[in-house]
Amino acid sequence: MSRSAHPAGPRHADVLPEGHYSGPAADLNELDPKVWAQTVTRDDDANGVVTVGGIDVKTLAERHGTPAYVLDEDDFRQRARAWRTAFGHDADVFYAGKAFLSRAVVRWLHEEGLNLDVCSGGELATALSAGMPADRIAFHGNNKSVSEITRAVEAGVGRIVLDSFQEIVRVAHIAQSLGKRQRVQIRITVGVEAHTHEFIATAHEDQKFGIPLAGGQAAEAVRRALQLDGLELIGIHSHIGSQIFDMSGFEVAAHRVVGLLKDIRDEHGVELPEIDLGGGLGIAYTSDDDPREPHDIAKALTEIVTRECDAARLRTPRISVEPGRAIVGPTAFTLYEVGTIKPLDGLRTYVSVDGGMSDNIRTALYDAEYSVALVSRRSDAEPMLARVVGKHCESGDIVVKDAFLPGDLAPGDLIAVPATGAYCRSMASNYNHVLRPPVVAVKDGESRVIVRRETEEDLLRLDVG
Ligand SMILES: *Cc1c(COP(=O)(O)O)cnc(C)c1O
Image (tube, rainbow, N blue to C red; front, side, top):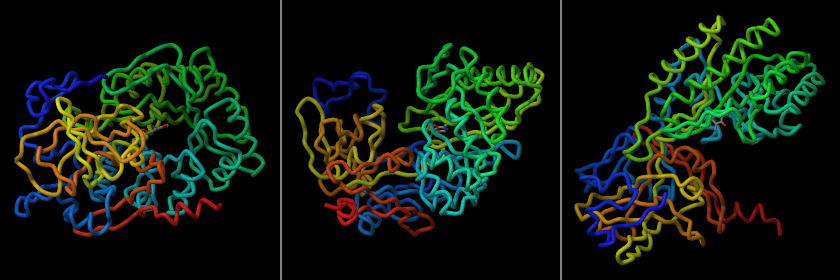
């Protein structure tokens, strides 16, 4: 998507930049509850400073420094609970740990009755060290190592999601040599690729994950898994994409997965008890996004699977889903301090912050859209078209590509980018030896560091000379 500013310059940008969805909000001080964590408010008695979890951002910046990810614990728990409740007792919700994982988060999930997806030894270690019962953990990944599989089987994870023909044999062998029978699902690719408002259904899928349904490959994988003593095949897994708003991709996927379940019943006389529809449900990054409520999603997915199974005369299997972004994404924002401000005449104003692509790679990686607001005070200055950029040695180091910020923005102001709870800290890097920011959980007027800021000692400790 290419964007260009209004030729008359940002201060005259009553005509929208090309390709931009919306102009400046009527009031830049307003915080759209769709994109901000639940307890975020602007305190008009205190010069309009923004508070979250009962603490204002200036206090947070003084206590914990910037940049920092600020995570609203009540919001996290409430979203986790909403997913759990929406799916009830006949389904399982697995939080996708890759979105953001820390020991505090594992404990919250455990307490709220969710299960957990991991996809590496590191994620597994984090989950186990925070006391997640192993049988509530699912282990994913297209290239799990022998040592990772061994650890997972030894720990007794609830399921391993098999991703290739080689892995079927590998897991069976490891389980058997440990004297165990490992519960597994087979991840298949059904030829549905879903992103946001569109999905494409094809016969084949060209990607590294899963075993293709096409050409009878998934059926062959099932045949082999059923024969191996080390494996207990409990279901079929399908994950179709990310940041999805439209349920029709899931509909096609469920139709194809149920078709396979029917073939398995016909060939082997076995009705597999579970179906996992993966994650990928979208959230609002900007006011233009309209995500669905977990309750609606649960209802739609359950209806789709039930209808397909009725048509195939199959008992409806137990459904599981794996939301990551939809739980943690909206619960956090990144708090930055404004540094250099550089107006480029006729184009836009570059606003540099004290972080960048090291704490949010999604804009550079996926052309992701974000919103941003001035949070340390209110301002009634004219909106200016801004681009929020980081401090890295890379011109693609953009955090928010196009956004309106108050024209009186000044160095030292605090700005915040909402909806950074998912895939920001978890994808953070040390590029330019920039130190990764902390994750600060806020609740009831208290702030608590749940992942501390990296220090220069941390960097030097790894660099053994
Ligand atoms: C990434 C992933 C998820 C979570 O995706 P979100 O977009 O964060 O909901 C769930 N399941 C699998 C297998 C994944 O790879």
